[in-house]
Image 1 (cartoon, rainbow, N blue to C red):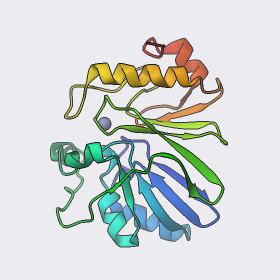
Image 2: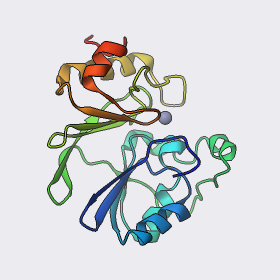
Image 3: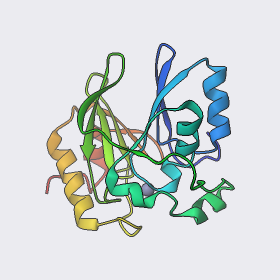
Length: 203
Ligand SMILES: [Zn+2]
C-alpha cells in the first residue's frame, strides 16, 4: 500500500483475511478489502512504531475487529507523528480503538492457519515475530532484515535485548528454506541470513 515503506502482509483463506503491519492509509485498505470481497478478521502488528500500525486503529474501528499488539508497546501508540508527517499520512486519532494484548504461543488465526508468536524484544520492548510452521514463513518485523538488523536507538529499543532475540531466533533452527519477510526491504530465507547477515548467529 502506498506510500512505499513498510511491508504489510495480507493473509487470506477463502474470503477471510488478516493483515500484519497495516501501513498506509486506512481508506486504501478499506477499498482493497471491499474490492476483493474480503472479511477482515483481525490485525496484528509486529511492534508499535507508527509505520507498522498507521491504519490499524481506524480499520479496527471500521470493521469492528481486534488489533493485536504486545502490551510492551502500547505506550508507543501515538508516538512518532513526524514519521507520519514525512509520508503525508494522518496522525492516529486519540479516540480510535486501543490495541488488544497479543496472544502468546500458538494460535489459529484463520481456518487451518496456525501461527506461533515469538517474543523478540530489542527493536522495541514489545516486538514479536510471527512464525507459520506449516508454510515455513517467518514475519520478522524490524528485528532482522535481509542484510541488517533493526535499530535499537528508538523508544523502547535495547541493543542487548535485540542481539539476544536474534540469537534466540538462530537457536530455533528454523528450516533453511523458511521465507523471511521482514518489516522493510526484500524477503530473504533462513539459509541466506546464515550466509549474508553477520548478525544472525548464536549468542
Ligand atoms: Zn520499527
